[in-house]
Image 1 (cartoon, rainbow, N blue to C red):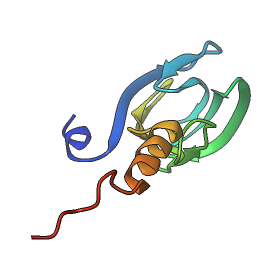
Image 2: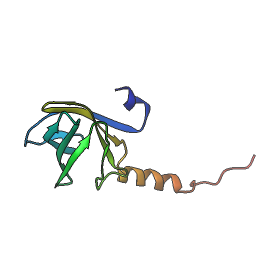
Image 3: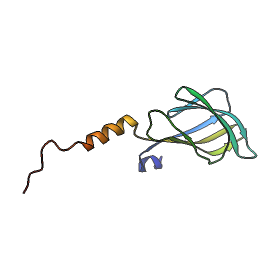
Length: 119
């Protein structure tokens, strides 16, 4: 995907059929519970950090922000196509986890081991 090559995000494209079963999309699991094709909206069940959450009446192209414990920024779920019993879209997340960012920031903040030599 071209977007993934440009930035610091991972993108997961998905297609989910209406079902009570959960489908893994990146770091979360999703289940499409209801589709209102006429109003271009849907109801979704999500498994996030071992908790089941419901999101009802989400509109086409409306971003759903999901905070995860090991991510520095929330992941973004977007649906860009709705049909009778199916949704298609993408989930984007930061490429870096909190632990990776903390390690990078702490190593960058350390002073150099030897002082710079004057010319």
